[in-house]
Amino acid sequence: MTETPTGARTRLPIRPRAARFFVMLAVFICAACGLVYELALVAIGSYLLGDTITQASVVLSVMVFAMGVGSLLSKRFQHRPALSFAVIEGLLSLIGGLSVLLLYAAFAWFSAYQPALVVLSFIIGMLIGMEIPLLMTLIQRIRKQEASQAVADLFAADYVGGLIGGLAFPFLLLPVLGLPKGALAVGLLNAVVGVAVVLWLFRDDLSRRAYAGLGAGLSVIVAALGLAYLYADQFEIDARQAMYRDPIVHAERSEYQEVVLTRSVDGKDVRLFLNGSLQFSTLDEYRYHESLIHPVMDGPRENVLVLGGGDGLAVREILEYDDVESVTVVDLDPAVVELAVNEPVIRDLNENALEDPRVEVVNTDAFQWLREEAGQFDAVVADLPDGEDVGTSKLYTVEFYSLVRERMAEDGRLVVQAGSPYFAPEAYWSVGHSLEDAEFASVPYNVDVPTFGNWGFYLASAQGEPELDVPEDAPALEFLDEELLDAAQVFPRDRSEEEEAAEASTMMHPRIIGYHQGAWRGY
Image 1 (cartoon, one colour):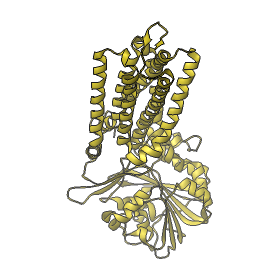
Image 2 (cartoon, rainbow, N blue to C red):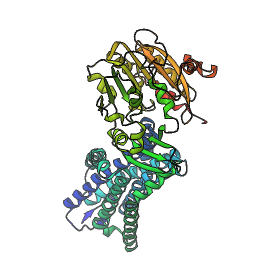
Image 3 (tube, rainbow, N blue to C red):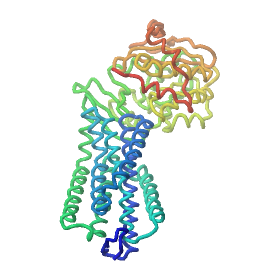
Image 4 (cartoon, rainbow, N blue to C red):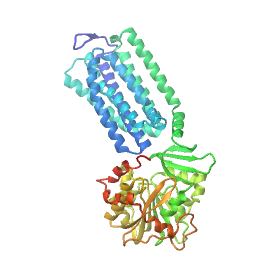
């Protein structure tokens, strides 16, 4: 029996040293679980919105603030620390374990993702903040010691647990269980450890009613999380389908993004989405790809480099020219390439372009590949996702275009898909300024792609402003011709004025992220 600081006494089922070890083990495990909840909230935001910096900033700032609130609130529960700690761990495991599914539901069905994220971050942070003060009291009930020593021991276990949780999340939970099931599994562990240690070690501090209530509560939490785990896959399928107009025919979460393919009921419209963003529709993809590829092919084109374009549709247009000797495709995600090669609808659409012997596919980061590659290319196609977050913004910087220029032949040409000059004008014109700072001369042009809206490109050269033309030996095209290209160089006054306000984007100042964040509002 050991005496508490207030004079009360706690009867332990095991020796104080062993009891203290198990409490510290609980601290370690609960800390790991808490960090996993935090990382899961950031990850689901990056999956659904693709904006890692904003999501991480919201989650971290709200949770840290809420932890401070929780620490203050814990004062009200110090008179019954064992019961309070068990209840807090039960609530934390239930809310944290279900957090990913709750946010997915808020995004898919209620369009209330950001409010839900803030509320969940605050509740989880507040509960985490209440843990350490209550554990401090429990530790002192096992063996009284100097407060500074007890705090040092608790924080050591807490921080080491955070390390393990932080490493387990990307290297174990996500690859093995996925995001929803990973959070649920951690919630189950959190509930069992957090409540069981109180039911075992501090049962003499609990009334019979409290003991029975905690046991029943633990059973309910384990049952709820277990059922959610069993139905998580079906829930994810239903929630994902709610976000798309047409039936989903293929869906997977690759190492880098969520890949979804939909097909309309009549089979005429097949669409590819990456992290919820439309990549193409079979109804009008030819408008985009003809506009992207054929102007850059009006010049040297023996060796062509495609950055992005893992769906093979840009390569299809390139291979229409018989004098093309090699095409190198650098696309980050092998899942997209595998889909383009193996999915019959896309394979037929790209005319099996990626299997052509002239084509080499490299699955790696385009920026890093350019730094390491020593080859020279006559034509370069930058068919990359919009620079809306940290991962993609670097692909629209002065530094990136400088690397591209180093890999181009002396008379080589570059084409860049640059987003919408109507919906995101500052982001579009920023690309032009970045090309200029990288010592390119460029010609901006824009076309209408109904499923995208108004869409813009840049044709660039390091040897002076290039001519925007369709090659004389171009194949029969459905959309593009000389007259259209002439008209494509005209921009409406209410969008061209944004050119002066936009600035070049760099690695240290990725302005294009901010430009995209302010775009598409009201549409």
